[in-house]
Length: 448
Image (cartoon, rainbow, N blue to C red):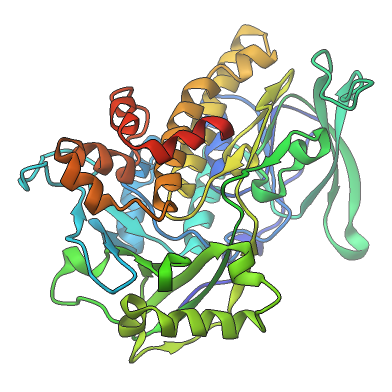
């Protein structure tokens, strides 16, 4: 069952907080935990400030294979095996008529032979225990972790905005003002820091205050999702039992994710244009969700004998990016930097990858005594190129004239290029050639 509370971690006594740290990380999701763990492992004093109890309920359960390297870097592979999350070996696509592609297996080469590579199997995770595991790892490595910390404001040396209301390149983030505790025991404290890392996810704490957040003009989407018991699975074939399935809805006006979790639970989400999912012709989210399922043969048959066991949740207009990723004394990681779309399950991978990159850049900056925008953001140009490759394939997915199967029939030499993006190996310059043959992906250049 989907875990929503985690008292084992949050029943502990919250640790004392000092007046100054080398780094303060805002946000205790995967990006924040990875950044804090990286800094703490390097011997830096770091406080991780999270507002909610550890391991809160969250969508985004499917990990892509390249997440393996971040988890290995954080020393968590053995724990993932111990927890017993469902193992994921492949991803499969189903068109609007219910026709299924062959699974894309991550451990096979383009001839269908085992490729012998490390890290080709990944996991479907319940985000509550998964996120808590990351947070606990940061604390083990030496980070001070508070899960009762509401960051109220940033402390600045200089004015954060110039006369035109744009980020002031000369200002430096110098710490945070925080409300700790709840109820009568709450108190407010200012904490000084050399580096501030914003890992606040879609709250985008810094970006919204500085006015740098921009909606992706091509991805104004909304999602409805819930959880089902006894949905169709493949118990006789463990390599298919954990497969993520991406299913087109009726007339390709929406698509579904189908993610097998533990205890016989399956996460099922439906994503489409905002006007289609939440327009005036719609009634309740639950009725919209059920009607889209009924109209899509690829998902309806999988849920024929299943029972929905949770309410229907909603997320609206969630694709965005920050035009500025770092400044003097501060940097953005994870969804605070930007979020694309859930279709290829890139969220946790990009959160962990950017958290580690941002943490490593902060370590170098602190060691050099140079916490400038250039130093703290040195990793971001390369990272953004990888994000753009995800975005290009997302744009292609939403183009009615495109299908992965059709593209590979025309360009079979790019099968492993498609697999590279699906597994998260998106930092390869060789992918540029493949995308040159995918014209609809060029719109990504306007949103990079």
